[in-house]
Amino acid sequence: MSRSIRAFFAILILGLTFGSGWTLAQQQSQTAVIISGRDIGFRVDRQRTVNVGKLNGAWVVRINGEWVEPDTSGTRSLSMK
Image 1 (cartoon, one colour):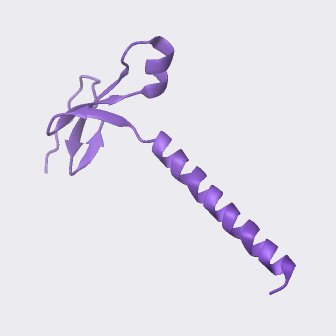
Image 2 (cartoon, rainbow, N blue to C red):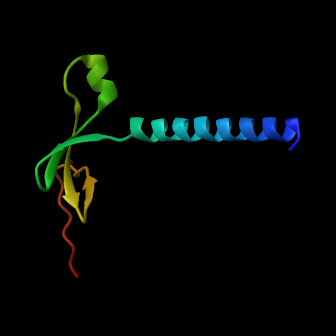
């Protein structure tokens, strides 16, 4: 194998390694922390918590396995099916 082909593969492998590590780090930093019980929890807003110095976030409920922020507008909509 020629020297330039070996150098190309070395650079390719290093680039893929660093690229996948950066992608994984970005995904982990965007994951929200939820302090929860079985079906109700509190999603922590890390940025506001760090800026203000107090725990900030939103209440969430688990619906079909996903955490959803409830509508707290105070209005009710009734479905007449």
